[in-house]
Image (cartoon, rainbow, N blue to C red; front, top):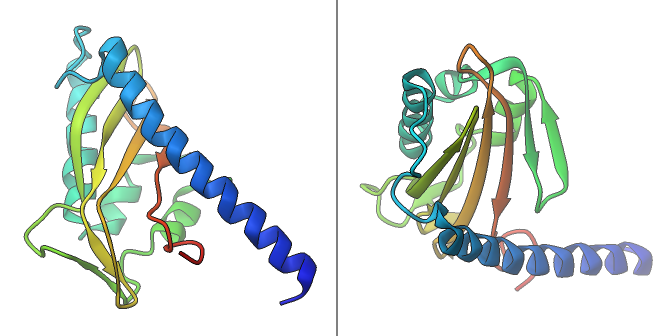
Length: 176
C-alpha cells in the first residue's frame, strides 16, 4: 500500500471512529427526545406497523435474504452513513448484505442478529434504535454495537429508503 493509500485509509478509519461516536450520541439524543420509549406516542397505520415488525423479524433471524430484500421497493435504496455508501435496487442491497457469505457467527447462536430497543413513527417513517448482537467475523470476535436505522416506506408499505447509522466495532473495518 502506498503512503497516499495508507493516509486515505487512516482518514477513513478516523472518520468511521468519529461517526461511531456520533451514532451512539444520536441514540442517546433520540432517547432524550422521546424516541427511546418502546413505541412513540404516535400510532402508525396498521400496514406500516406490520411492515416494520416483519422487517425486524426477518433481519433478526438473518436466514431469508430474498424475503428481506423483498421488503424493499424494487428501486429501494440503502444508505450506510458510516461507510458513506449507497446501494440502489434489491440486487445491490442483497449483494451488500450477503447473508450467505461464510465467516459470520453470532457469539450466542440463539441470539437475534439485531435487538430493537425502540421504534418511533412519524408519518411513513420508522426509526429503530437498538444494537447488533456480539458476533465473530472471519474468526475475530466483536462486541455488540449500537445502531439507528431510519426506514422510509411507500404507500404500499415497502421500504423506499433505509438509512443506517451503525457504530461499527473498532477493528471490523480498520485496524484496532
